[in-house]
Picture 1 (tube, one colour):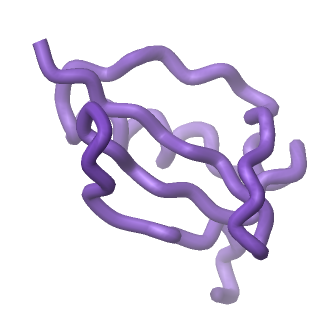
Picture 2: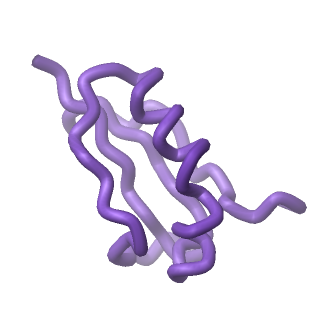
Picture 3: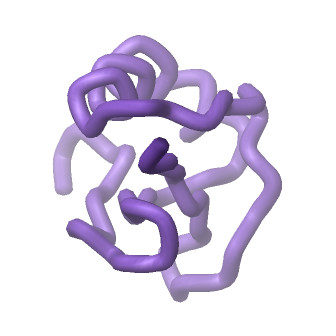
Length: 69
């Protein structure tokens, strides 16, 4: 089973602990739905951007959590 995971970062790329703990997602769509539901809380908790990984392969990122970016 493939695991999709988010990496949470400050604007400079430093990894931070997320304010909302994610699960391991089995599909890219599930991971993207979760980030869509939780991005405001993640941003308020100190994350500026995220990267999406499929296992160890980076799929995309960094994606800003700030609406004006």
